[in-house]
Length: 331
Image 1 (cartoon, rainbow, N blue to C red):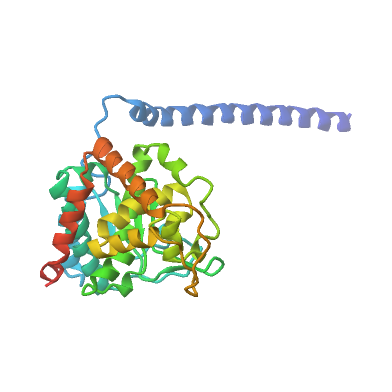
Image 2 (cartoon, rainbow, N blue to C red):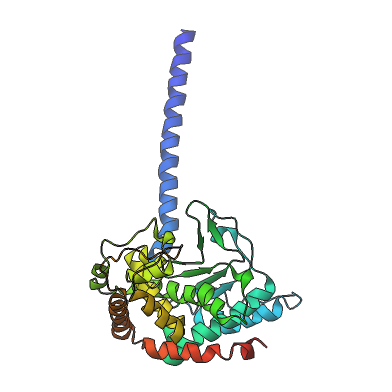
């Protein structure tokens, strides 16, 4: 009898336990639904108004901080007018963990912030409209001090654009404001390159462009092209020969920052058979590189004009004019 009583009692206990467990599960589910409903309703509301900025513009800066003056400048020049977070204090969570990177120095960050505004943001504000980069520009610019080396391919990453939101610039500790050619090659060509990516991610460029060099792109061997070889194939740079989207933005970026002499030199190389690293003339592949480059520039120029109301010739002229006054804005 005692044994049967124990079994009976245990059966009742287990029954009560599972009923309580089932009740609590349903209760928790109901509580979660009730808690989530306001958030769901708010997220789906058609009447919800977005704030003026996705960043906190009211957070008081530390007046005792050594970076207070610079941080105030960034707030006035970037955060308030462009809803843009200009990051010079390197954030590991916002950096590419595949590379060994170092932060940008405070001095170089200050120089870069002034140059980016003068040679990029103010240029578009003058030639296109003051609202253009407010509507279409990146929301984060992240400065990295070192290049991003890829030991496997032997290449250096100079910049990235992520989803039309963030632009990362590398090698900023090597910035030399007195060397315009270096500024253009390592920084401003990269900026225009990445910004062109942002623009074509929003509005597609003509598919006809992809057919011009179809079958000639080399995504894993482009780094072995010389400038001469790339030009003879119809590419303004070796990297342009990696894939069609890079080809498209390289046309825009190089045309914007190259001087007349440098641009004409690309066209001259493009009109001749390419040469390898030893200076030996390569076999003529029958491609008229000059005609191809000019055709690509024509497509890119019309796309910028028709899709974005950007006159690339006027944009380039404004950039070249401003480059003669770089020292004035840094002093």
